[in-house]
Image 1 (cartoon, rainbow, N blue to C red):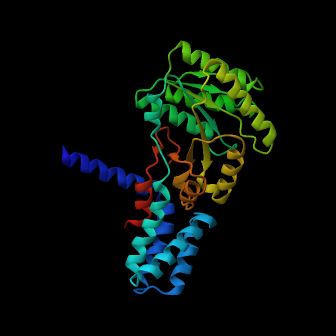
Image 2 (tube, one colour):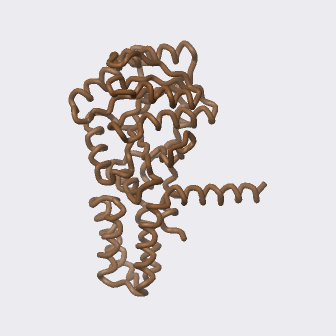
Image 3 (cartoon, one colour):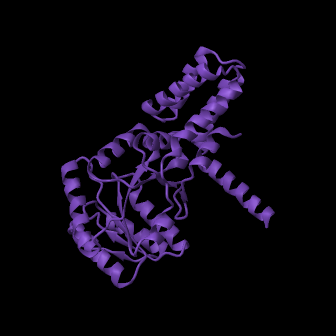
Length: 317
């Protein structure tokens, strides 16, 4: 039994490393090469390390914080060996995750009276509709009964696309015609969820961020209407971001957190980019937990985010 457990852990690690291959190779190889070339800590090593952190799209504020902490530790504790600095860098990045509460979605669903209502938000093109299908499939595998509401009624083919994913996940979909009132769809979805005793409701929303005032009013209206059915809903507002956009993802978080309280984040398309370091910067700067990583095009390609595993992937051979 112990052997089988260890074997599965090893296989999971290999899979995870492969899914983060581009970020891992870009970041790890640069860090590794930097430390291989030097045995003693020199002033320019810190500068080069700063460039590597920035190139991984960790972001300027978080990079400055890491570098400042490293310089203070070097002065105070008199590190001279680059291996010590390498380990210290990893520790400093790990410290960014320590105080960020990242409760498992499964536990949150179980601790609430059903149905647990999740509003999915994000700009067009980040993979929001795909993520809803994947999340519905994942929750079904864990034994939860979900229902999806197609409240993005303004984008061409959005309802059809969501229906395809709902069928793949074998989860019911509540929909109306294009240009229907999004709040009305959400209302119908929650009514159906209550009558059919569903565990989870997933509400898709429009992603027209260029019209911020209109989007804010729309999301507020959806929330108000849902509260008529379930007063404390939505229990969760999940923001979907595309990892490959790098620094642009930071701007999207800023804009959405300006008018809605984001509970958690899904970072998509992580397998195809070298900009995975954006996860570190976002969690540090906004203190919002990353709940899932989108790691591919298949319905099963949605993985629970594990901060420790994520950081280890950056640093281990």
